Image (tube, rainbow, N blue to C red):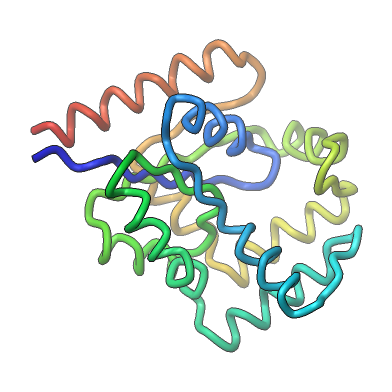
Length: 189
């Protein structure tokens, strides 16, 4: 029996992860967003989101202190299990090595797709986006914090597939389709 696919899209802020996850969602994948957990729990706790993102950062850090480094994967696990019964699933926002290790143990068919873009271009993209925009200094701080404190580099370095997103959206989509076909072929063997 063929299993539904589980893909986690990883990469630094501004690399273009949302382009990939939105595209896959348009292809029928269920998209599950790790960041949505933060927003939901903040709302339930009555914590307001600040424009600078500091309230979210503090809330995320407190969640990880209280529930462990893999807590987002643990919180999302029931939704992943339920969605996989019906459809392919794409995860948007897997950050840490701990989250990856937790999920790969539960879902051995998990495939990591890493989106890469030049740092200067990522910073430009993040600075002009409508939601969750950051200044260059703020995004540099965020990059370093995610690498040092969240072990974000592990899933990026260990990805099964890489997709360069420096400019040409058509090439990006072609490469994403190649990756999906390869995952389908691999899981079919």
